[in-house]
Length: 392
Image 1 (cartoon, rainbow, N blue to C red):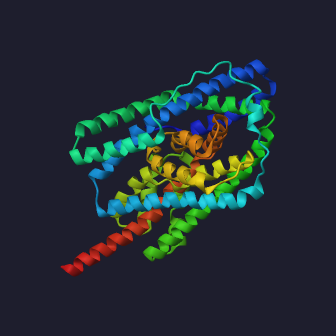
Image 2: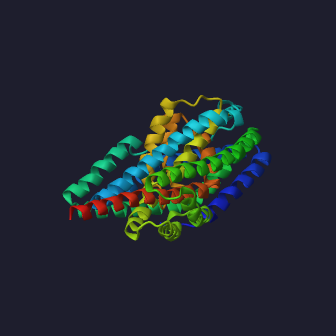
Image 3: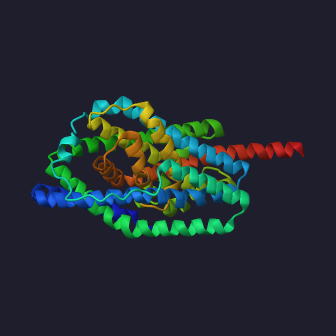
């Protein structure tokens, strides 16, 4: 499940450059050939999403349920609440600020018919996202209740198969997919608009995640009684490590070490940090909401709360399928963006390219915010120990 994410990011950035060159010089038949590949790859991604959800969410729920305890449940609630808060904060900020930064000049409908694919062969997914989520919860909780170790081993092996498929097919082909999208965008004359707006959107998301971290540490400091600015400063090594390597697993030792330096008890840190690395994705959620909002504004479409509520809620649950998968959140959210926000495959491909270009920023925010949750859980643990001593 390990991967060299920086290498993938460099390949994606190179694909953007190559796509721009191809889109500037390729004749119509070449762009249509690339669009044919683009269509099949988008269908393959949609086919993978249900497998990712079932393969990752089911064993994650089973493993969590087997170790259920007060501290574990508190950590899960805080992680889920933080992820939802990040989505809501990003939605409000995007709706308020982004319309003043970027404007609706992207016309997808006209360009979509300019270079149609030579042929299209749909690959329907085995089930929709909601069905897979319900199935994962039922089977995951059933494994715990019935102590079905054989089923758990099967689901873990199924997860290994999904990881193999992602690493062997999705990861190698992703740069070519981005290249085909950029080539089509260039040929249709929309790259200049998207590029300028994308830079603004990336800067906005960087500021947004930093503000999110500041708010989370202010709240954690208020609850724990510790200096939030000092605590956030001590977590900077984890932030920059996560930004550089784009991997929760690789950054985990650094995050754990910095959390201990914040005065969190080792028992608390050893529980919270590894768990949050799998279920807490506040930074990724913030970026996904902002990127989607930016592309909707660019297309001249309104940003409505009724559309974003199911989008945020479903991503927050699917987030547990993200760890160990390059760009896991953006990959698992493909179908959600289509059903909840009405994204076309091309628009989602642009979102994927932007997300992958700054994947380290979301990872850094996720891991640094884990330290804030550890402060709150450690405060609760201390209170519980004091109450137990008084009873004795």
